Length: 208
Image 1: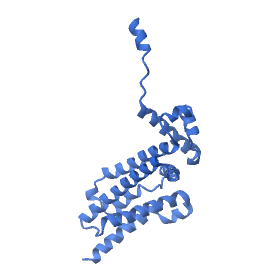
Image 2 (image 1 turned 120 degrees about the horizontal axis):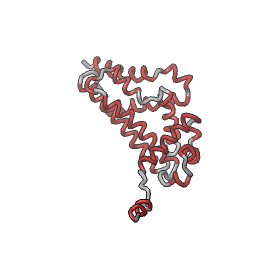
Image 3 (image 1 turned 120 degrees about the vertical axis):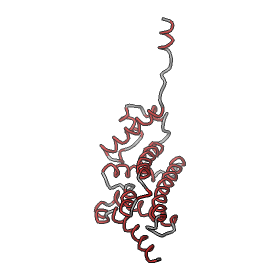
Image 4 (image 1 turned 60 degrees about the vertical axis):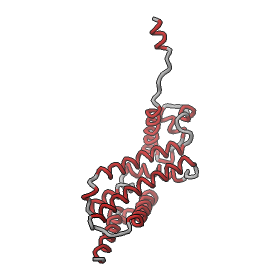
């Protein structure tokens, strides 16, 4: 009986990572149901079945919640790109891989709307650090793809400069997809990215 009393009196062990994931999942449900503008500490806490105070034990601000959610989303996309056989990608396949970073599907658009919310809080030091890390992760994936194409003689370019240009194109197309669907439907994001890669291939041929 003494052992039973001791066991019952032990504090419950809480998996903090699991709790954070529960809150992130709750946030995505709010976004899917009510839109990104509805995201707040209050709405997410209610969706997760927690109080605002309980949620503050895991996230000090809304920005931290958004940052971790977007960090996971970008990591998923870049991991998928890195799982591809980068050494054997052609122009079309490379364009398709890079276009996966652009919010052209309903799920990606929901993630993109949260990204826009995060950008509005870039003055928060914890958010700005995450944004920088995300940018570096995206840039690294672009560099890897361009480096592979160049190594096989498919394109010829200054990889770092062209990676920066492609990064800017991807971000620009992403913002267009999120803010002006009427215009974005004429842009065909994948075609724009592929045209940029084909331009580098044309430059490569002209140098021979």
